[in-house]
Every structure is written in C-alpha cells, then in structure tokens.
Length: 172
Length: 287
Image (cartoon, rainbow over all chains, first blue to last red; front, side, top):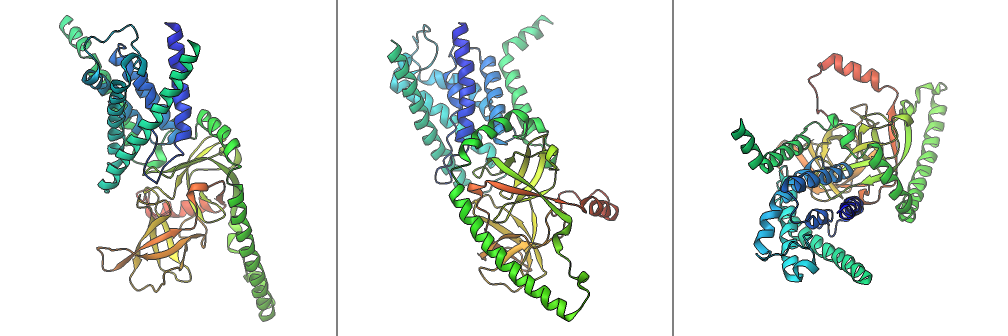
C-alpha cells in the first residue's frame, strides 16, 4: 500500500513538472496539452471522492501557481474529480474486479479505458476553457480550443500510457 | 444532532466540492491584478527556482534570433547616435550654452533580467523574471526588451518578479503615433500574440499604415518614445469620433529572453503629485 502511495506522490510531482513544460506548448495557437489530469484519471477508482477532490484541487492549484492562471485549473480539476465517478460508471463493466483498482489499459482493456479517458479529458477541457472564456467574446475560438486541446491531450496521455505499460511488461 | 452529523457525512462530498469550488472562485475573481498574493503567483520562491532550472537549459535555443535582433538594434542606435551628434553640433554652433539640450532619459535607470517563464496562449498572460526586490525591481515598473515594450511589473518577490504582459487585457498602455501628440490607449484583444488594438485615437489624427506607435510618456511607468508597434490597418468601430487601429507589435512575445525593467527616479514625486490632484479614486487608469 505504501509503495502505491509513493508511486502516486511521484506521479503528482512528475505530472506537475510535465505540465510546467507543456505550458509552453501551444499548437497552431489553439491546442494546449493539459497533461497533468493524467494523475486524476489514474487515481484508484475505489478511492473516496473526497480524497480525489482534495488531491485534484491541490494539483490544480499547483499548476495555477506555476502558470499564473489564478484558480482556473483548480476549479476545473475539482469539477473533473467530482465527475470522474459518473464517467467511470458509464463505461466500466458492472462486475468490475477491484483486484486492481487503478484504471489502466491492462485492467480495463483498451476500448473501455480509451473511452473513459477521452470523456474525462473532454470534461476537463470544457470546464477549463469555459472558465477561461468567462471574459471572452469569441465562442468559436473557445470551441476550437476545447476540441483541439481534447484531441492533443488525449493523444499525449495515450503516449504516457504506452510508456508506462512497456516498462511494466519489461519488469514482468 | 445525530441527524445533522449523519446528513453532513452522507453529503460530505458535496460540501468538499463546494468548499474547493468557492476557494478557486475566490482566487479566480480577485479582480485587481495588483492585489495578488506572492504565494499564488509564479514569482514565489519554489516556482521561480524550478523555472530558473528550465531556463538554464532552454535559454540557449533562441540565441541566434536574439543576436540578430541585437545587431539590428545596434545598427539603428549607431545611426541615431550619429544623427544626434550632428544635431548637437548644429545646436552648439547656434547657441554657446548647451545646457538646454538635455537628454530625456536622465531620470530612468535599467535593471537587466532574464525571462524564466512566459505564456502567450492564455487570455491573461503573465511573464516571470529572475530579478526581484533585492535587485531593485519594484511593482509598477515598466519592462522592455530590445524590440519594444513588454509589460509592467506587478508582483515582486525577493529574487523574482511577475510581469503583466502586454498580452493581457488588464493592461492598457497610453500610446501615440510617432511625430504627433494625439494619444490613444493600446490594449490586447485576446486574439493573436502578434497584434494589439489601439483605441480612442481622435479622428483628425493623420497616419498611414506602417507608421510607428510609441509610448506617450503620460505616466511615470514608461519614458516617452519607446517603440510599441506599427499600424497594420483600421478596425471597425462603433464610435464615430475615434479610430480603432490594429497594431502589429514589434516585441516577439514567443521568444522573450533578456528584458530591462525601467526604474524612474522621479516616480515617487510624480505619484505624490497625482495623488494630491485626483485623490485615490483614479485606480485602473492609464499606465
């Protein structure tokens, strides 16, 4: 158990640093990779919602501090944390075996995991760009940002996953 | 009492959610950009240290471009020195007392700093530099780089500071068309990091596309005559008395590296005068 806690602490710090680097990326002026939500997606599914929200808020706040976005990511991450359970209920099989509660390709299969991840990423991108757009008039740019960022983030996160799985397979 | 506790435990996740949502909204809607606490900005000790580390690696990538910019700027300044020298010589011939020919920038001093974090993709962009209070950087100092105006310092730490970028609608800059005295207000419209909008320029000002836009010097933040951009064209406007112009910014915000913070020796005096004139009710005015 403590090994898993340590892993998630490292994931927390790793995702924060990855996001700090990714803050500099902005493809075609619209697509931003919001990679740090990988941490929220990967939290064990049987962890209490309160814990998920605390950790998500904390991570979002750290990202805000580094990116000077003043609570935007903290709010969106809290929304994602609250919405994670309903999203998982959409796709996860009823008889889901809690032997391995961490959502991953191995425990869920590629199609369920990809659908779960895509929905979570979309939820987050909608939240964060709508919060940003509160003071913006350009609705079409906001929509473009949501769609392109969702796609980019989803692809990058699948890439993360493939790295994580190959390492585990090598170890086996 | 037991029922209340049961209720709170049953719906605890809603309370936690509301708590965090309210917390982040408080952060989000602190309206005045000058009131942000240092701990919640990128100018705090931890994040500026991390950014400093990254910057040690990445700062080499832009050197070629920066070098070219500096060469051009250098050539321009050399030309200017030659022409000014000629002018002073002319004045000297006309009048023996040259004390009346004073340089305009004598009250301004510069602090050189490196940009360690910079964003251009957000609607409200900020820049972090690696110089702070210990190096003489103070809030509301103007910041320029070799190409033009960059922004205004807003939060200052011991060895780092956060700048409101010109690419931030909270910043309005008083500007004028070079060689005229009519001024307008430059603000970013959240569209492209290369362009900004000059508003409230009177209708009777004569200008052509490509004319240079410079700071007006009507505040203590920037001295008069710093280059901001060039006129790209007119934009549609609802007001018949004023032009709205699209301005191409000369500063390339995607590759900022070394910037200068301008400290004004007379700022305190000017601020005291303004406060005496208008009282304290003139917040959010022109910078």
